[in-house]
Image (cartoon, rainbow, N blue to C red; front, side, top):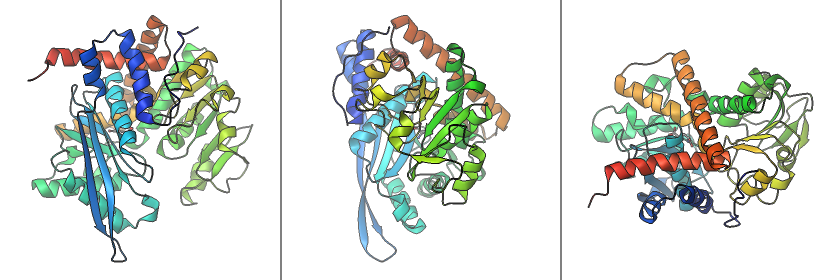
Length: 424
Ligand code: GLU
């Protein structure tokens, strides 16, 4: 039985969710008050307006954010999100999660995140390019290969990264490929980066299965979300012999008790504007039904706040591997703990992406590119080792893997902070 986790608030604010886990881990670490305040406070928060002339000639003004939560371990690192519900609090939470995530996988970066309130599906390619370039120009003194390195996140992709490289390079009068990661290969991207987050989800899921004596060949999986993380996680777990019984996207959830052919689903989505609608050999179910299926592994790889105090008691999976950032609210944590469900927390489970981002940045600095085998081997090793360290930390403190991961991460950043000291 794990130590009971107090419910600190009924949350719908991801930053408060982050803080409630943080406070618990800081308490266990007996972190002194000043350091505790320092580490939970974002170092820099930038809010910019992005005026754009739309294709129809009208002018629209978008709002963009970039938060550097902490740079004690290295330059800020984290994706940029384009979505209508982006908010400063969300970006602050995501930036803090990047700080802890990088520390958990031993990547020498701090945490940052950016976002623009916009719906990329409603914008033309020209409009998206203009928004990206103007945002980058506004952030010209923030971004940099030694200060803050963006990457893709929800609603952004390789093309967006290519525009950032170009805009940044134009201002600096030379090509600076290391200013972002998740770039197209031809512009200095890394082999294996696109699959990295899903691959990391697979690595930690297999590591957890090993600890629980579960056989992947006899295990069932449900994956929520069929974007980059969800679809690759589903494919790689399927390749390991798992039976993926349910997948989902914005069009709904699809279920087959005998298993879904993930390669057929990938093909279907590719030929169907990236959507699963109309998937054959699967029954349509609701999103909530997918989350509460009796499966061995549940991979929430869609959005924040999917497993809440409202549905947590109905979850029947043995393992939850958080492919998304923040899919479980803080109020749901104790409910899942009481049910004995092993939750592999986001800051560990989806850290494969930033790990290969680090490899990409290293390759850019080396000017020498690695083989896919080398990238994957090093990623697998990093994820397995992070899982084991988090597992041992959580056992030592009789806490969940989530609090174990926070303890590990906060301890590293606090140690570095104390060594650096406070300037001023
Ligand atoms: N957006 C990804 C994440 O949340 C990747 C960040 C990165 O590679 O910098 O982890």
